[in-house]
Image 1 (cartoon, rainbow, N blue to C red):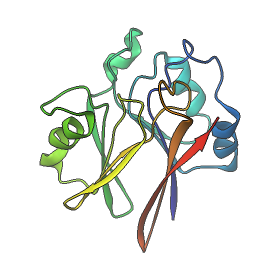
Image 2 (tube, rainbow, N blue to C red):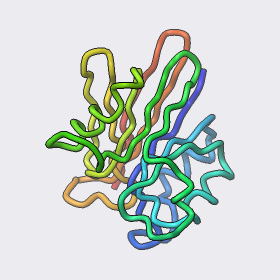
Image 3 (cartoon, one colour):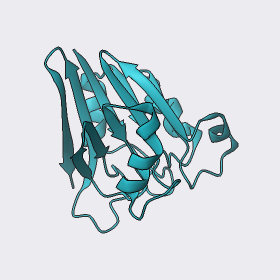
Image 4 (cartoon, rainbow, N blue to C red):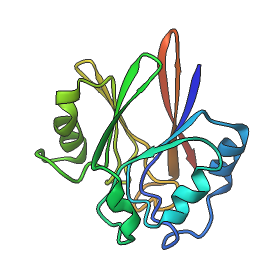
Length: 166
């Protein structure tokens, strides 16, 4: 069984200097992997996350720090028997962020697409693909709560859920 933390749009340190308590609690409990779907803002976010688990991520559209140039705009990883595509969601064709994320990853035939950009938590099954936006743990914009995602993969499949907090 794998427990994976799903993040996007941390925008740190502009929106927040430290990780929120709810996020730190999950990190300290332990995760096997961390996926970040872009808009980290600074490398310090990566440097802190890597202390807890291996981190996979992509560039967003706000990074000014040159370190993110080494990150791809799209990454596909295999975890257990599931193929996970990671994109920020700002590139490609489609009217909405979920549409752009979906269209940009279809050639890879993923089981799951993790994306960000809108800061809006989202979960939807399209054909055989699950689309998931964890929202933002630091910049909720017009959302009522901050959020991130948790993914569990085991022999029975995968379970996705949002974790909301104020």
